Image (cartoon, one colour):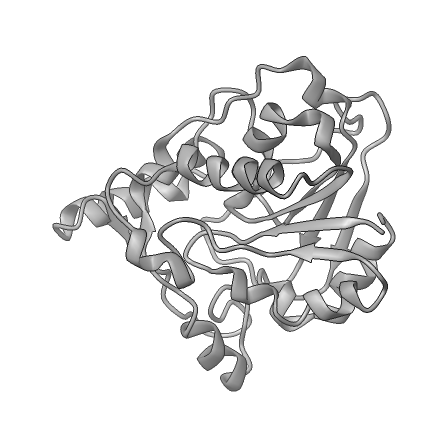
Length: 241
């Protein structure tokens, strides 16, 4: 049995994995998909003090409290930063890092460094008077849609789980100062449809930090592939288990 720990991206909640979790569980694996502090069912905890370090603490705390080992740690979008810093703290418990259409940081970088468009969101929040919280991105015409979701029913469902993102989470730097984290294998899954203007993706180096060839898979769908292509996503994740 493999343990999958699924970490949602900015503005989302653990609910976004609802279609993927049973597919992994039916294959005999354990799946944990929490909401990060201040988001989803934990939105009541949102405050200006909530940052990337808070979210990393959520994941590291869960791993230790549940005594999880050999974890396949999956981070979507912003959560690429979360899983990187979490693995830096408990590398011996992580079997694989999966960057799901995610930010892939270097040591000392913030979300605003990895994805420059994030700076505009922070500035917009400051101009609106809510300088410590960023509202969800607006829905765009297809194929971009709402985080890559275009089906009206799915868009309506997605809206129920979106909440403001704390600015501090986009400003705090990732810590990658533990050499042991470089030994963890990485997989990158890229969503190829409907990327909005201004969103960039760094090229994946041909060689992973552990010296093995890079592993990059693609899904022909929008950013929130766990909603639009749950079966196909689960199939890829099961290859790692």
